[in-house]
Image (tube, each protein chain N blue to C red):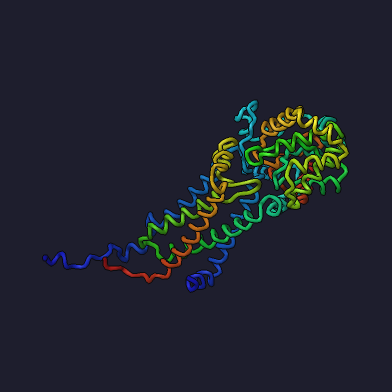
Length: 181
Length: 257
């Protein structure tokens, strides 16, 4: 596994992809709670560019106020794993273009990323996405009914992401052979 | 056994296959895009808020109102009856709908204390938004704070509120039935009159009115705040922002004036 990591991330392109994806995930999670406000500020003609940029960056500071220690740690971890996952995946696909890819790997990847997105939460409780999906009244009831109050999604997401990374590296390490059934 | 059965079967991969991208290879990027759209759609159709949502007992407020994009202009008029830190005539007003037992409200309380301390032209209005399903004792604390305001005035209210958030923010787990009377008496309200007010439940309606207005303006979690700029333009603040972000938003509101 480490050998694959070294092989992939030795190439600057894949390191850059991982960093960009990780920062995008983190930025989105930090800015999305105030997306309406952000859009209003960014589109305003009477606000100068300096203030727009300053305001946008100031919102990123909400990781210290809007997230619990657990959810901030989880966000950083998911963002890094997301970036690594995408990078490995691109490497794998490029290397194996045209080969049959593994169905189990597809499921682990998509499952991991979707579950992790569901698990990213902030403020008082639970999940960003679940909140949006279940609406004002339903989400609280739904999250409250879960044994770990929404943390389940985060943990499942992390496990799936970890499995996905493991599985891609394992598959990447396999020699390119036409196997005999 | 026939010769056919003994012949190894090879995978169908050919050299020409390896030169092109198969549909299966595209499945993951497509799935990621679909997942992204799903997330984006969820957020969009959820009313633009990603704040956590508690079941808000606001039967008088149609849910549709909360789902509209921007209802912040429906913020109830600020009057001398409100709990205000700063001047009622301030250039910028920030109305916060808060839950006493929400840890993020405690952090935002610190941010807002910094903001009003640094800028005399900013006033902070505190309104109630207790999320009973998440914090079962929060409505009682809210009602108690209204009793303190009724009996001791604005300064007593802020003394109680600052004291409560400071205690909870510091991890003080003193039971509610001990901490509330302690803070009420520290704020200058006699224990007997406070008990009479609290037990009468006459402030519950005030709390419910604030809560209804919070939901009506688009509040979907706590803390939920609305900045009212010099021109009366409203800006939604979702969650606990650091003081620096609130100050940046104040500058933005001033530029738009």
